Image (tube, rainbow, N blue to C red):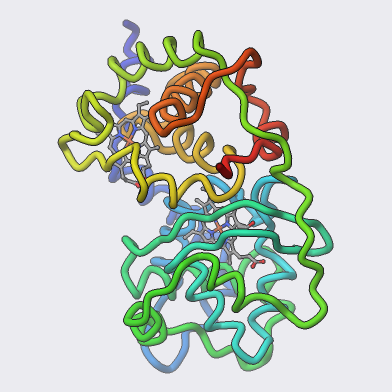
Length: 293
Ligand code: HEC
Ligand code: HEC
């Protein structure tokens, strides 16, 4: 194995965020000026959390991916300006969001998993980062009162489900019809077999031989809780998360074909039946494939 290849296989997990923060803070002087008098300096935490947790789906400039992940631009500042908008945004992050929404005129009908593993500071900071990035700062009320960790703590004390969060979002007159995720998911038994082989060599150490007996902190990949988290919308969330985050020491290190095969393998372990059409790796196609039972 070449030296370059070997280096690529062992990215220092600590080194990457530091480098990214250096770049982000060098190019974000406008946000810096808005440190609130409360002393909650969210800039660095917010940029770091966006990079490590949100960028995967919502993309570098918060522009999202058509049919799969909504943008975090006009919609977020418009929601923020609503009477309970900040409460909604905090809860969308804490408890996830499921179901049809219209974002900047486009319908999405997917699911965002909850981010309860993030701290109150991280959730507040990443929202403040989103609210002041991607041109959003131009649309904010002036003065801007940042979301604070205490608001997140208060929301966390009263848990709710992603469908309830959706109800919070519903604005008067907002159309409720979703267009995405309308075809049933398909995959083949050959894909499941390939996925199983890949799973054994790349995933099993952490997620276990039966997908629910893992070690080293690998969470379960089957069962009720797993399905509730990932199968409310289309298959694209599960595929993208796995591709962008797994395995943790070399995220994205496998081929797209490998990742769809792994997704097929995980689905077959959750009661989905193989058919005669392969699961594709095309994001648009994946965004249309529903996992609803
Ligand atoms: C696995 C992909 C994924 C990741 C990672 C992700 N999101 Fe989302 N997010 C979504 C999807 C999908 C939706 C829309 C859900 C729906 O259609 O109901 C969404 C919705 C949202 C919304 C609501 C937008 C609206 O118009 O109501 C906000 C705000 C948001 N995400 C912010 C974030 C932040 C901040 C992070 C990082 C902490 C993050 N998301 C990480 C997929 C993701
Ligand atoms: C070094 C241990 C490790 C390896 C190897 C690993 N994972 Fe993970 N996996 C984790 C941890 C830890 C989490 C939870 C962290 C997170 O959500 O970011 C996770 C989360 C996941 C999740 C989301 C589960 C949920 O409900 O939140 C999926 C899906 C997943 N892994 C799939 C895979 C696949 C597929 C592979 C093989 C390509 C793999 N993982 C390899 C440790 C590992």
